[in-house]
Image 1 (cartoon, helix red, strand yellow):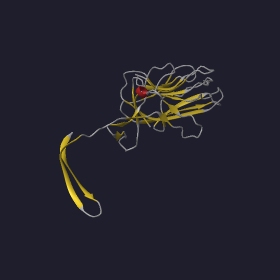
Image 2: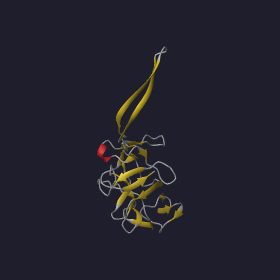
Image 3: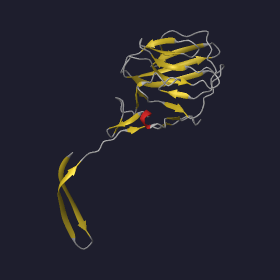
Amino acid sequence: TGTGNLHFLIDDGVTATSVVVSNLKLEQISCNGLVRTWHDQSGNSKDAVQTTSANQPKIVENGAILVDSGGKPEIDFDGSNDAFNTSSGFALTSSDDLSFFVVSEVDDADATQVVLSQDDGTGTGRTWMEYRTDPKFATKLGGTTHLFGSYTATEKNLFSLIYDDSSGTIDGFKDGSQSGSQLTSTTVEAASGVLNIGESKDGAAFFDGTMQ
């Protein structure tokens, strides 16, 4: 907020007149931008949507796009109610191979925070990946909680989980390297519910941090 003068020129093609307007009050208005739809890039129309404005993650703060240290845009989840849900169910059978990747940074390690989960639909539905207070990242695919490697709050990582149906194993990776022990002799349960980004299937354990 401040005061200033506005100078402009009026030219009707015949006579040019210079005009000065003094003592204007100037105010910069800064706004936040929220994300309603995280579009599916695979072509399968599995867009992730949040129709409630108060629960939409932020991508613009005070008029500036949120970016990481490398200048790449990121979405900020507030840890209290921000989340996305796919507009339709995701069919997962017990014989499907599965790969999951996410670039994320959690703000703190003071609570369990879910990155991706699936509602029941016609199956059990599980948390695909979560940050724990250990601090470890873990999965509940296969019916039990399996811990992989550790993480550090406020540190950005590429996490991935890979399920191989033929061998019955789930491996966790952090920044391209295997992290923690392999989960063996397991089968991913069938489910057909929607996917949830940033919350558990029961609408809790909200993610507090950024994703890309």
